[in-house]
Image: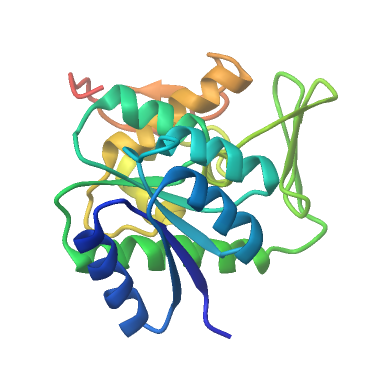
Length: 238
């Protein structure tokens, strides 16, 4: 059965072009031209993924993302017309898994969509018995995709959960942004470092500032550093 993708975009030329390309890739696609229609389509049609414009009539993309994530955890690729970090951070915080800045190529769009679906399939294949326990009272139930901290459930978006699990699987090791982009997002061209940074900030807001450790010029990790990671080369990039 073909994967179902809902495209919520008020610019008809962009929406039609996106739909045509996704259909040529074998996906089933529906369109919604404003925020309320997007929420209704998501509720009734139950898509596997939503491509969501940030600027929409009726309800903006942030509110649409909040509402559809309230119903169920649903992968969201957000489209934005400006490279504004505040918008991107908010979008990721309310449940978007990734973003593309307009103008974008259809090839890049398809690559992002395919990467999101690969992550869904990879998670579905994880053994049911797997669980991870971290410092600060954090427990990760991989099968249920649930995180508790000191007994209380912490709501994470699908991408935040995947990022936390990837870091937790390598305690004491520092993973570079490039490695995380490959393992969590499925990107192999090195693009999207800000996406990693934004999701790390979201994890810190929800689990505490000390949960994810930054090693400047290297990347991110959990727990105390291994000896091999104890002397990174400083860099002003972070």
